[in-house]
Image (cartoon, rainbow, N blue to C red):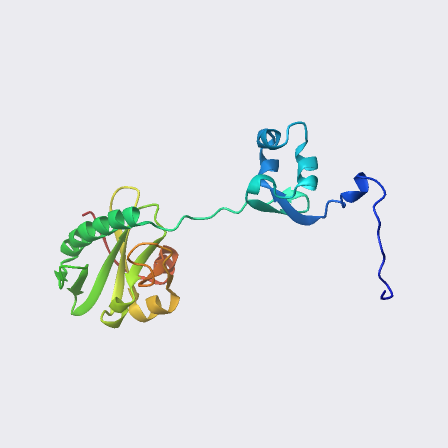
Length: 202
């Protein structure tokens, strides 16, 4: 036996249960005592946790300083929501292009010519905090025009150079056709760094 090691032998059933650590794992059942009762009638949530750290195979929450920390996650975009967003983007992108006097260049995207340069128009509802741009599109456009809806239904159009967009974009979390093909650009970057173009009401 190495020096410094202490052997510990339990004397009673109570000794079989180690003290609750300050940092550990608590299960979802502690969040709802009624669920604990269904899994182990008569046991308190804390006792249930000690005897069975993850009962019933439920997922766990980390515990910090005795408090359960529940992480909020954003569900990745699915195919249905992605298709709906695509229809919205195409329709309002064409409207905004017309309001700006831009000339459409393709039927499959919102790429257009404005003031002699090739750009793409990306629309976002009032509560949407980002827009997505195809990685391939970065290779042929000069700028991204972010058109962001205001509370009164108008859209504020901001221009961001494609080099900046490419450098700050992050991969989409979508599980649809855009997976691995689209970069996400935050609205806040357009608002802090973008050049104001125009306010339009499509």
